[in-house]
Each structure stands twice: as structure tokens, then as C-alpha cells.
Length: 124
Image 1 (cartoon, rainbow, N blue to C red):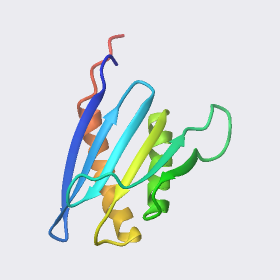
Image 2 (image 1 turned 90 degrees about the horizontal axis):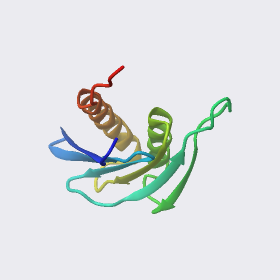
Image 3 (image 1 turned 90 degrees about the vertical axis):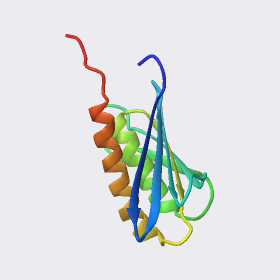
Image 4 (image 1 turned 180 degrees about the horizontal axis):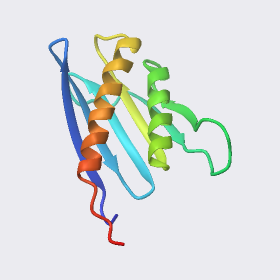
């Protein structure tokens, strides 16, 4: 991977846009999830577990106090899936954390599909 990859995604739920902005570098992934328009929200970081170590990725909230659980869960999910450092920001205005989790998980899956579609072919 020579340059950072950027993917934007959007879904409509309850007549409100929910947005994802994904930035991937060689050693880290940054995912900004927002309701309505792009904002920085509660920010969580996670690192994947080292090989042969059993357990979930390690995570912590760096900034904010709303949507802490969903930010950590999604950061851990992203770190484990990508096998690199993950930063996830979650910003909501009107939905509660439980509903935000469901919506943002759908958005992350949609984003993952686009990421795989855009994966460069590997030469053997």
C-alpha cells in the first residue's frame, strides 16, 4: 500500500443520513461515524492482540463520554478485522447508543464490502 485509502459511505435511517469516512494507512485505520453531517465524536482506539494471545483486542476511549461503548466495540472490531491499530469516532445527535450501534454496524459492513471491491489485485 503506497498511499492512504479513503472511502466514504452513507445510509439513510429514520430520514436521517448516517455517514462513514474511512481512512486506511499501512499501520492504522481511522473511521469517523456521524449522524447528519461529518463531526468528530467520542474517539476510541484499539490495538489487535498479538498472535497466539487469546482474548479481545485492547481498547480505550481517548475523547468524549457519549457513545463510549459503541465506539470501543467498533474500534475493537476494526482492529481485529484489519490486524492494525484502529481509531473510531462516533457522533450522534438524536439516536441512543443502542440504536446507533445497530445503524453504524450496518454502515461498517457496507463500507467493508466497498473496501473489498476496491482491493487491488495481488500478483503471485
